Image (cartoon, rainbow, N blue to C red; front, side):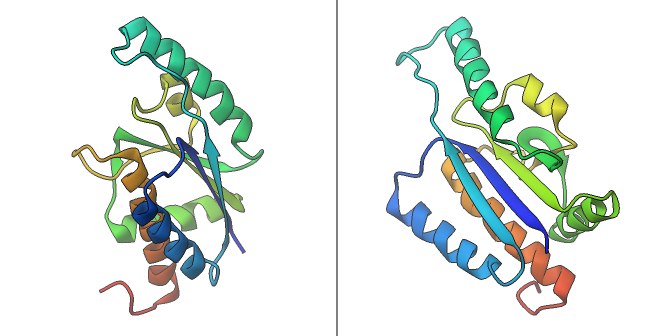
Length: 160
């Protein structure tokens, strides 16, 4: 059974996001083990300078890199990443397995995204869309797509 880690910068505060995540986590239990790690977002002033933003991203990077399980196939979720169809995303899990990985780690940055060093160390950079979404919604969308990927792989009717 594949293990999936979701490493997120920032905590879900909105109840509706948390409930949606819980629903997909429950559904995913039939396919894989999933662990969600929430890391605190580094403090920033209300109007941070570019240097303050860079320093905050660097601080978050240390936490992210220490949270990635050893030997995991890592996927950095970022707007400049590769766009995949749901079927292509499903194939990403097969690719990871073919390459000998039994664990996948998806990394979602905070409101300022991910530091370049996190992206450059990932096995894959993946974009959900060219549009911008709140990072909390991105977590829900990622969980739904992981669930859909397992349904596609298993030939279930969820994906039409």
